[in-house]
Amino acid sequence: MKILLNLLITSFIVAIIAFAFGAYNMSATDKHWGITEKFIESMRENSIEIRSRDLTVPSLEEADMLSAGAEHYHAMCTICHLAPGMKPTELSVGLYPSAPIFHEREPISDPAEKLAHAKAYFWVIKNGLKMTAMPAWGLSHDDQEIWGMTAFIFKLSKMAPEQYQELIHAAEHDDHGHSHEHSH
Image (cartoon, rainbow, N blue to C red; front, side):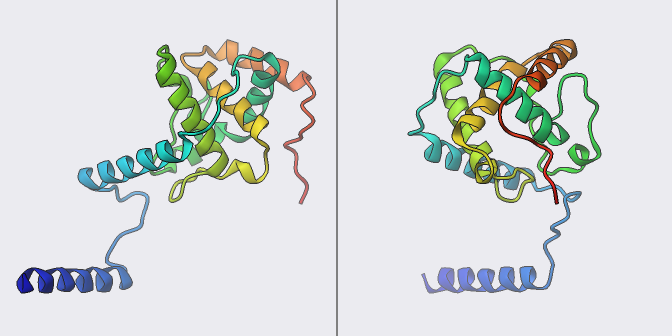
């Protein structure tokens, strides 16, 4: 038992020294080991699931909600998550972990799975994610706007570029009372 304790303490001290002197490469071009990536992904998924579990999901089919969600997504999300017909941006290419590309995902038809995803999407949009480029939009947007973005993400699945452009054009003509042109 004493040997195990000494081994743990020694490993901990070596790890602290290695991290303190920059031995761990924090570069986004130096990918994690497979096991590390699985561990981080599992920790992220479990954290989101636990924290989003008790959310009440509103109807995500309302036209006003989808229109507002389309406007917000287009203005704030496409630089990382892209849009149908959009080529990767300089920012999206450099992200690690990479941002999900929602329009490339298969539609979710199972109601329980869709509900769980809606809760997770809302929570992530509102709170952001540490050690990714995902900001906490809940600091500048209310829940209704975030639910709109959540609703729109579901509509993006396998969407054609022409359909996306039509939705964005229609959303730009709706008045949602929010501007994405912020002054400095």
